Length: 150
Image 1 (cartoon, rainbow, N blue to C red):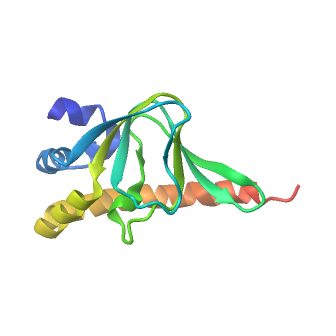
Image 2 (image 1 turned 90 degrees about the horizontal axis):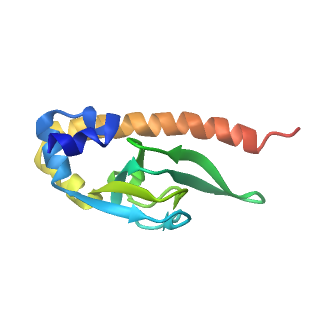
């Protein structure tokens, strides 16, 4: 179990070994082909994904500009945090940039774990909040670029 956690980089490293084991018990491995849409903005968000290998473009639809990449997730990065944030709808789209392997943590199971174990819930939401805060900052910078007049 520890070897599995180590290939998913810094996100799982934020958790105690007990919580890592519990999180990995809700996990599935996914393979995405280059160019494959993984989900679209507004879809039900079923999994919190962690990239093992490959890259995934997280994209927003910008009126009059089309889909714009706001973040590219690489090994160890998390995408689709919406799986653990109500109403559990994707706030962006995701597309595999290259052949990608990802670990998917079932959002419903993660929510159940949080209700059953407040310590696990605290660790999970602290880690997810760090991801959301970093993405918000990055998205603001991207949007400044997209909407700049020059």
